Length: 546
Image (tube, rainbow, N blue to C red; front, top):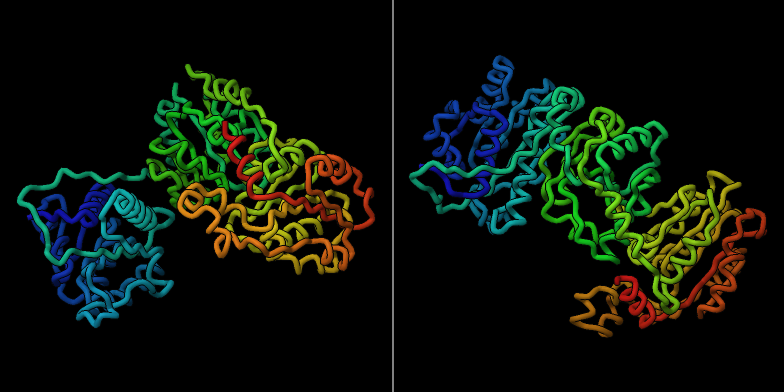
C-alpha cells in the first residue's frame, strides 16, 4: 500500500532524492500514510520505536554513528512534544534529524478536536527551520510544498547540518494505492563554493549556447571587484542583466525591465535565469519570466523562490560564483545585443502632466553624482522606465514595501554626505503619512523633495482589476480621494523653500532650477509640489506601454 496524498508523496520523493533512507517511526494514526508507504518501500531503512522521546534520542545516536540524516515520524496529540529534548540535543550537536510530524488537515484546535495541538511555534533551539506544509489542492500549493520541503532538507544537510521540523497535514480518509508511485518531486540542487568548483565544467556546459538573463533585485552597492567579475561573466555568455533602479547594477549589458517587458512587451525571453538580490518593485518581471528555469544565487544560503521554477541554489558569494563560471566567449546567441536592439525602439510619447511625465523629466535633469530615493509603487514604477546616469545612487524602501517612511529615510540618507545632493520622488499619501519628518532639526540644504500630489492614492486607480470592477467607487476608502492637502503650509513653517506646479509649462520652467547641480544654489531644503489628476495619470500610464 502506497499513499496518494500529494504532500506525503512530495516528502517521500524528496527524501529519496536527498539520499535519506533511515526513518524511525512511532505508532499512530495521522502518520499512517508515511508509515504504511515506507513499510512497503524497500528503499527505506525503517525502525520502530514506540516512545517518541526515546525515538528522538535513538535517532541522534543513529545519525551520529552513521553520519547520515535520520527522519523521525510521529502522530498528533502530544507525540511531537516528546521530541523536544532529543531535538535540543541534536540542535547543539548539529545532527541532521528531520522531525516529520503529522496531523489531520480538517481538524482545528479551536473546534475542540481531539488530539490536535498547535505546532506553529516552537523553541528556537530545537530546529533550524519549521516547515508547515499546506494541503495540496492546486499548482500553487504544490509548488509551495515542494519549496518548503527542499528548504528543510537543504538546511538539515548543509552548513554543518542540524535538526529541522516538517509538519504534514493528512487526509483522514487515508487514500492509498496498491502500486508504487512513480511520482518525482522537483529537487532543488544545492551548491556551495566547493561544489561549484568541483562541478564547474558541467555548469559551464549547461550555460553554453543558452540565452542567459541575470535578474538583480534590490541590492547593496556593488564593489569594483564584484562588478569586474560580473562583467567578465557577461562577456563570456552575452548575458542580459535585468534590472530596475534599486538593483544598483551599473555595469555592462544592463536592460531596464520596465522598458523591455513593461513598455515594449518583448517576447524575447531567456532560456535560463540566474536570480540574485532582494525584493523588486518592478512587477512586470514576474509574468515576463514565468515558466523559465531558475538558478538562485543566495549569499545567505536561503531558498528565495521568486519565479517558482528554481532548479539550483548556489550558496556562494556573488563575486566567487561569477569568477568560477567565467568562460570563453562561446555563446552562439547574441542575447543582450538582440534585447538592446529592441530597447532602441522605446520612445517616450507625448503625455499629460503625471508621475510618468515628471519621472522622465527628473531622470533626464537630475545632476550626476546625486542620490535619488523613490517612494514605493507608482513613483518607483514610473522612474524605472527611464535610464539614470550611472553615477546616481537610487534607492527605495522595498524591503518591508510599506507606504510609511520614505521622507524619513531620504532625510536620514542626506545626513551622511552634506556636500552631496539628495533628491526624493514621493507620492502625496506617502508624504503625508511621513510628513512629521520635515521637523527633524538636522535637515540641510542638500535635500530636495519632489511630491506628486494627485489628491489620492492614484495607484489604486491604475490597478486594472480594481478599476474594471469599481472605477470611481474606488475613490472613497480604497484610494482615499479628497484629502485636499497641500505640502505648502507645513513645508514653509519648518523652513523649507517651496515650489509648485499644476501644468506642464510651470513644471518645465522650474525643474532645471530644482535640479541645479550646485549644492549651494538653495540656502535651505526644497520641496517641489506638483499637482496632477487621475485622468491624466491614467492616460500617461497607458501611453508609456506601447
